[in-house]
Image (cartoon, rainbow, N blue to C red; front, side):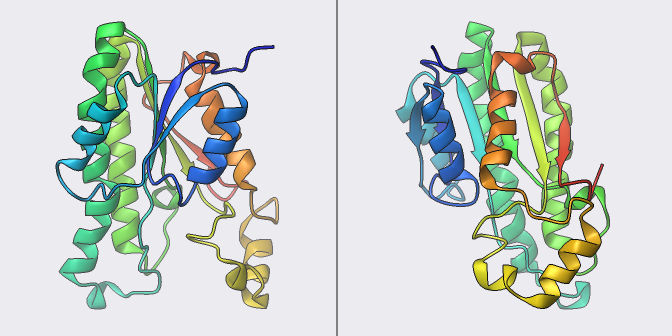
Length: 226
């Protein structure tokens, strides 16, 4: 039985971080050919170079994670920290989309899935730079998604939070009693999502099953944001 994305060529950025490993494992099991990238996408030319090396790209997984500077007051947030959030999570997103969509438009087929955050959907103190960058991703996806839909290119974002991964929820944090209590209090489901659950949602958005989804930022947070 063929997989849901059998034979599709899939670029996954930050392949060894954040949602990269879980996505690659699942997508390969569904028949995809993976181009796993670990290059530094803060370099302006890197995104275009990646797409050029990849050749045909049927699916782009924009897996972009960066420091969240959690706990930093606005008055202590430096220009460098604020800029870093955008350099890691926003500018590479546009460069990747700009590089890959011409070939997708030419074929009138393509899927772009962004691993974003639900943090901009619900106010959180001392998270201004991260929230601003993730919010910019959401606004970008909504606008560009509406534009690209005319050419049958589907761009959507998973607005996630409380998903188990070492970038944001390392084991030592998960083991802390205060974190466990906060998880029980804040998340209606009372647990972290497993990476496989998140990757399964990405698989849906990357497959032909999601052909009526365009320019959407869909919360994936166990009810924390809706």
